[in-house]
Image: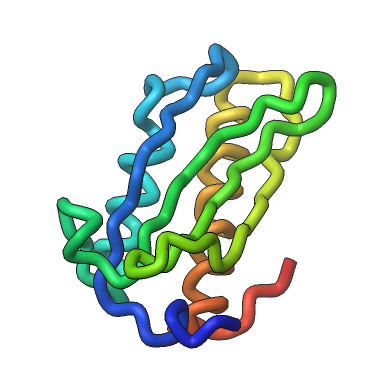
Length: 127
C-alpha cells in the first residue's frame, strides 16, 4: 500500500454522480452516503477543497449492462495527482426496489470498510 494512503488524514471526495433508475435517492445518493460514512468514521477529516486534502477520492458508479452495477473508488495522491489505488465493489443484482436499495447500501458499506482497511484504519473485512 502506498505510504500516502496510510498517512492520509484529510480527504476530499469528488462526485461523479449516478445515472440509474434502478436505485432510489437520486444521482447524489452514493456520494452523500459515502461522504457521511467517511466523516462519521472519525478516521479522516473531510475537506471541501482538494488542495487541502492528503488524498482525493473519486467515487464512480458503473452500469455494466447485464452484469452487476459496480462502485469504483479511485484514490489519488493530491500532491502528485497520481492514481494510487482503485477499489471495486459490485452491487448484487436485484429484482425488487427495496432489495435493490439494500444491496446498494450494503455494497457502499463494504467499499467504505475496504478503503478503511487499505488505509490501515479498520480491522480486516471478510468478503
